[in-house]
Length: 378
Image (cartoon, rainbow, N blue to C red; front, side):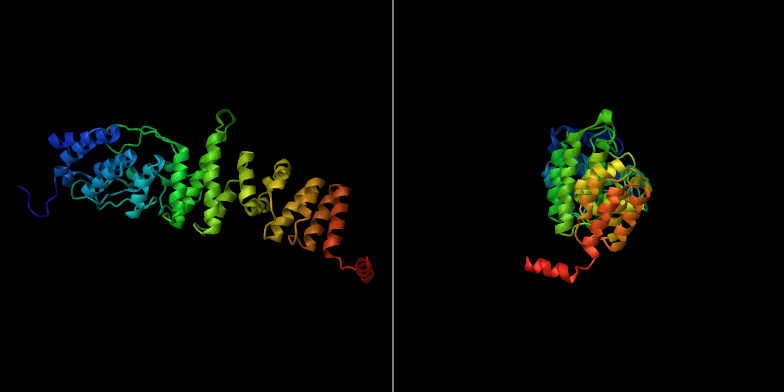
C-alpha cells in the first residue's frame, strides 16, 4: 500500500505496458488512436518521463491536432517537448507545430530532469536531445556544421527517432516543411536565437545537398535557398533574428564550397562576402572565384572591404571586372585607388593601372575653373 510521498510505480509490466505499446503503435499507424489513448489514460500517472516524451513525439509526427492535445493534456508536463516540435515541423504539420509553440515549447530548449523523477531516475539530457546542440550549449553557432535540434527539422527519418518502443518513420516533403517554417517565422513565433539557428540549419542543408558532385541534389538546394531568401527578407524588413545571420552567411564561404553557395552569399548579403575576402588570404588567392562573383556583388559600407576587392582585381589584371567595381559610387577613398594602382603596376598590368589612375582623377581631382566654364558654356 502506497503512502503520501512514496514514489509511484512506473508502468513497466502487465496490462499497463500493453496499453502503452498499443498507443505507440496506434500513433504510428493512425488506427484506433482514440481507443488506445482511452485505455492508457487510467495509467498515465505511472508513466516514466521518457515514455511520455516518446508518446508526444509520435503524436507530433501523426499530425492530428486533437490527438496531440489529448496527449498533452494527459501526460504534461513533459521533460523535453522540443524534439516533438522539430518532428512536427519536419512532417510539415503546421497546426501541430503552431500549437506547440503557443504552449511555450522552445525548439532549442533544455530537458527538465525534475519531471516525473519520482517515477524513474532521470536519464542523461543527451538521450532526449539525441546529443544535438541546444540553446544553452556553449558551442552553439561556433561551427556552422554542428548538429542542433533545428537541424532535425530539415532531415529525413532515419529509423532511430524512437526514445522507447519500436522504430517508426513518417513521410516527409521538404517543400512543405519549408513552407510551414516560413509561415511560423513570418508570424513571429520563433525568438531571435531559434530564428537564427533555423536559418543556419536551412542553408547548411542546402550546402550539404550540393557538396559532392556524385550526389548532387539541386532540387533540395533550390528549396532551401528559397526559404533562406525569404527568411533573410524577414530579417531585413521585420528585424526578426540577430546579427548571427551575418556570421552564418560569412561562414558559408569556405574552401571548396560549391560556387552556388558562394553565389548565394554574394547575391543575398554581398557585404558578408567582401568581409570574408578582406579576412581570408586563400579567398584573395582564388582569383577565378572572386572574378566570377563580381557581377553578383554590391558595394559594402566598409571602404576597406571594397578596396580589398579592387586590389585583388588590379593585382591580377582583371580589367573588365575592375571597370565594373571601380564605378561603384561613394565606395572608395583615394588610398583605395593608390593601393590598387600600385598592385597593378607591380604585377605589370599597365592597362589596369592606367584605368585606375584615370578613375581616381575623375573622382578626386578638383575640376579646374576653365573646365567648369567650358562645361557651363556648352
